[in-house]
Length: 425
Image (cartoon, rainbow, N blue to C red; front, top):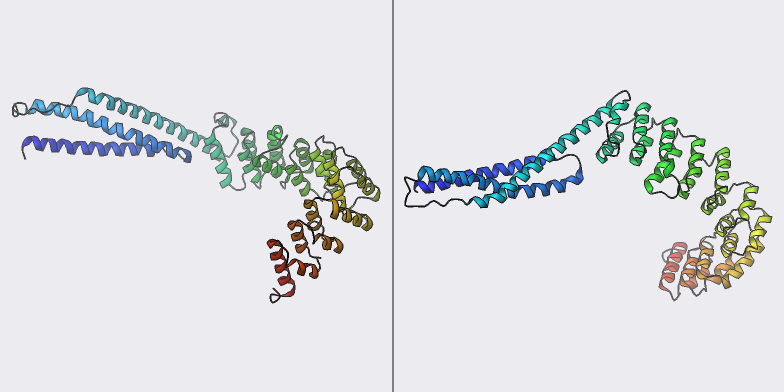
């Protein structure tokens, strides 16, 4: 091996070492710039890949040129006959530009990391400070996603946070639903904290809500430190039926709350609110009278299922021109037997198949003559409901074992096996 070959091997070794150092440097930059945001992992990997190739190319070009220039100058007198090819200067310009851009971008990422790190430390100090510090929170951007995630994580990991700290967080993150939910979940949340949270989200309460806001409003109203005044205020300012029903069920045993609750629902122009009121069993007679004359038929239909309706309101709803009102009245256990039997005979002949099935499914006291008649119904789903009814006679079940519809036959065989023993079928 001559001197020229040794030099070339030496240069290749140097370039391999430099390329390895470039790879280590790029990986180090990714690690240094990596923060605790999971969504940035893919972006950092892509940046690493984009920076590595031009960085290696640039280093290769920038090192190769001076090495060959020096080798040519030093070895010219010894190798005059052999021309050493010089690396062309234009070829290193693009990778050099890429390399400079890579260094600049890496520097920006490093600056961003340092900024985020300082912000995390500031938020951590504010969270751990024993006394409220308004000046510190003023300097922290409350709408920053990373700040919100850090505060939310801290509240989730902490237990029994003191009331002043909860008030501080509630006041500094007024529109943040996840943080508000974490505050409500704290056992140390007081009535004052709950009132602050409700004030923060009062403007969002009108109309229907997404699951997170709905859960927050219900959590505030049903918190052990909440009072009936706060709960009634939430019911008054929200139109979400799920929120109102949940609050009504929580305070259902309180007579005073129930009266205020019903007054709010009945005075609401929305039919949905009045439907909720009509579904409450123990409402007063004047409230029943008001709902029985409601202009919305869905409200009257809901009231028709109330088992405590007096006779005069039963007769009033019996003449209602809406079919759903009369259907619900038919299923009301307080309706006189002669009325109900008349309804049943009419329903067997004239009602649609869906209601005939409902007549059996939702009526545990369905008379035997109705079950025998509907066992011959032309719709298989109705006959299947007859099979599943607890009061269907066994001779009817035995006849349906040979039904033309396979699902009905299968259910009838299972019913016979359950009632008469496995040896039957």
